[in-house]
Image (cartoon, rainbow, N blue to C red; front, side, top):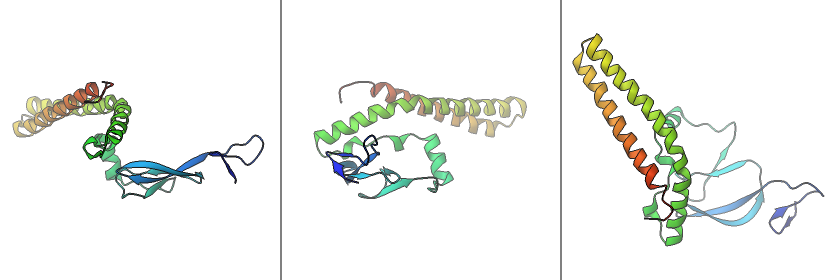
Length: 164
């Protein structure tokens, strides 16, 4: 397949998809050349520099990883303290602002856990009269509500256009 100014053409009306090959520097991709897409390649933010993870039907994610990603949102965001210069810091800020849209989803998930824990605390306290187990569930409902407050503050803070 010949490359012509960044676009791959193999027929008069056909334009196959093109992926950008990149190298990683400080958790950011630097585009080096264009290559044809053979599969969906996604850079893994937790992988060593230069490694890519191929997402396909054969790719296996462990249940523990799925559960962690279902409950916690930190894997979506980039650590701005690792930025070496203002350009990387701005790119990290823009990425975090884009990922902000998923925080209400996590708020709803945590709300379900808070209500569930509070309800079980009520059941154990009133119906079964087991105070220690009720205290356990009430404590976890308070921890969950604290996490929800943290998510709400992050969501509002990331709504600002300018960087802090």
